[in-house]
Length: 363
Image (cartoon, rainbow, N blue to C red):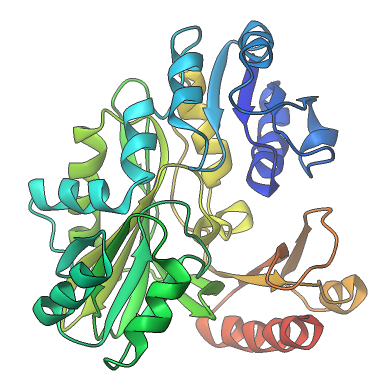
């Protein structure tokens, strides 16, 4: 089967690596001249709205998917009219706008931080009076890895935040005094079959994910699965979806969904029976889903800006290195390591070792 992927970054690269053992082949549409997934398939270099390129892309694949949620909605509609596209365009359009996303959560009875749309500087003042401070001002579109948002802690922060973000539609969210940030990764097949990976606890710094650790028997697992199921069924979703939550006083508050394979699921490459990447491809291709069970204790450490020395990483038992073929650049995800261990104490030791190397290499 030939699978078309809109986007050719590291997620597309890892999808292709997972698909080759299934005898799947890939074509990527991506406007950049040398994306990191290009060596793993045919690369059509063109704008996402290039009609001729979209026609060639569709002619060259049996089924299509996307590797990031900022693909234009128009592109998804054009592709879906010619080839099966999973997840569906409706899921992409919902995840692209934080206000639409929050309204969906509200409609489905999923708790969210208090939020208000903000279109003017005066509206920001009014919104802050309702949500209180601290609060987080975010762009409704295109924000990721800490970009497109500003934390408001005192009234004096409003002018600077508006100067930074105020030229586009915004949303203000009340700050949640959370104890943990977790994600729930779910996968749904074309036949409606649904499976969930263990809840993952995430640690961020400077708005960028640094460490993800699956938590076996997490007390939030059932609640997270329930909320994810509501969204997936409402959107008639096919493929892997990540649902990010704040945990505060034993309750989940929805943060956002990602309609794709997700950074917090990279541990599953070596840490689960069937990785998120293989399961996404199984779902898209109409194959039976694989087991989402953890193989044991595992974690994922991101490499930001620059990767540690490969030999130093390889010298640590249970460490599996994944480099993306990207040049070094501040705040860029250039690779990650998946860590496996026989018990929790051993895992923590390896996390400390790899984290120290990653922090030292970061630029």
